Length: 572
Image 1: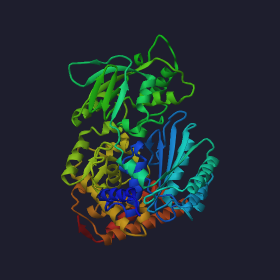
Image 2: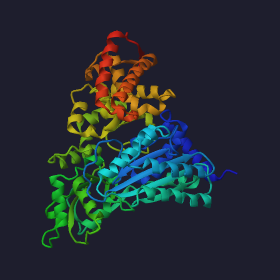
Image 3: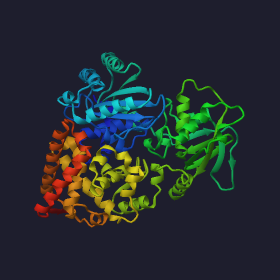
Image 4: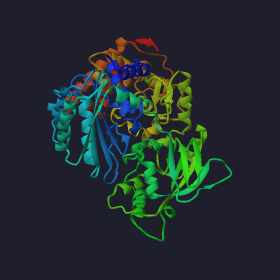
């Protein structure tokens, strides 16, 4: 008889399915749902969750792969900046089956494939014969990150999910030690973790409500003013480190209104913070020499030296926080009584919150993603897209847990990719370096206040037309990420009938290329990718898609196509 846990989990999956139709297939939905629960403490966004799904032909027994550095999901190839010694590097491997048990064959596949994938001397040409490109790309990114970081603390989590399982057989647990042994053979210093989630465990995770409150212990009673909700205090460095880390000691990415690459690494400012932290001067406190941290919360409840914060976000002090965290991970760090200055502000109103973020960062040279979210143009995009049934997440998790379909969500990263492909004609950057969206030289090309607001809607719509087209075909379903941005660039040229369409041209698009024309444009992309692969002697499609020279040559093909083809469009 089917247990209650299995029935209840099936109900949860059915209700959650409304959010992923039609973007994901049924099996992809099951993987997305399982990853969302298993990675709940990483606070992964929907972009993060989608980026790791590798399920399909030749997946090597892996349905999803994720990599995190200090709690932040790494989704592109932009080089990681200096995190100092002992950064926390996590690789998460997920297998999800809609079965009544945990098959030993699943373990066998990983025992064989993980050592091959996690080998620095691996041959991708050989691996590509039996493993799909997404698995190879993400594991390559992991290997590159491990080499780029300085003596990282490595944890590899392997999770098996059986949606209809009611119990775990002891033989399966015993055999799973083979995976741990294989991982230790590849990385002797890694900490392997093997988890099995049956229907009961997964449904319990889904019921678990994420904590929105956090306590901050001050060294002394805080100073407050007549204006409700504003406090200034000092916090012992050890207590502040506890505040910014999770229960297992990792940096809690959910606290930061920022992107992992906003941390600037070994800059003059950060080296100065490091030096200040390393010097133990009994006559000088740390907060005397540092500007401190600003925290915004929806509600602040004081109780003597303790502040209870609802939905806190650190909006200024990212560099200081990272350096304090790095100090705490240094085994030689000794206990001390120094403190950091902290401002805590209660701000339920989103516009007030934006003013605080912009004001507290106005004297820095940082191009923080959190600061970008407060730009007037970002608010205008959010308001305009909402009028057309789309929810624009200019800030991470803005619409999380509100039952909104993935199809109707538009993250700032997704908008950046759409504009990189359609307007700036840099699909190779959209494919390989999406985190560069926040850099001045890229951001200032994309999000221009003088651009017609309709250009942003047209850009995301034409990209999604291309995505849907590619997902419908069996031959391209596993290559959507590699083909989409280049196809979007060509589709925009075809829709505007201009080789270099402007924002005004894109805003005026009322009709998109039909299926017949998209097929013709896809032939151009495939032909150039094939030539690019020959020029590079490359077997990996993702590397070809990230090649700027391929973009240049494809634009030349587009000119020829445009001059020789009639206009064929479908109503948008």
